[in-house]
Figure (cartoon, rainbow, N blue to C red):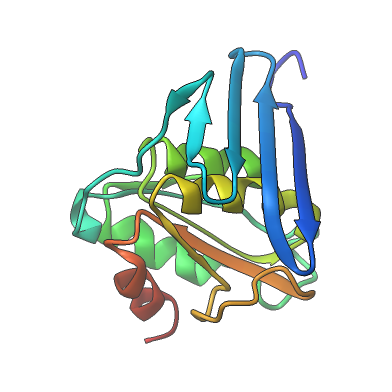
Length: 168
């Protein structure tokens, strides 16, 4: 952790298949992202809003890779290369929960990951939607919480563009 201090606490409450509460706390930066279904998303008590960028070339993206990237065929490297060439760039922070919160805060316009656990994305996904963004599975379906999980979260404006880039 001394060389790359990125750790956090992420709590998502799911009731009847629907995320109703999300909290992500980054103690290094002292940032608390929160959302309750229907009540908005907040950073340290201040309302969050996704960015308004509508083109990939104007968008900064973020992604993640499977834990064992060498053994998983759907390892995301081809998608990474594609988006790196048609956007402002692609980052990889190492925390899906924080990636999602950064989309909600307008720091990134889009996030995708193909092999991920529900507990890594539940809180952040609600925070994105409550900040005005859009979250689906990586193929555009509504059920991104059922394993095997994949996720695409955007500001909403570039969602179809990213789906086209992933599969089109």
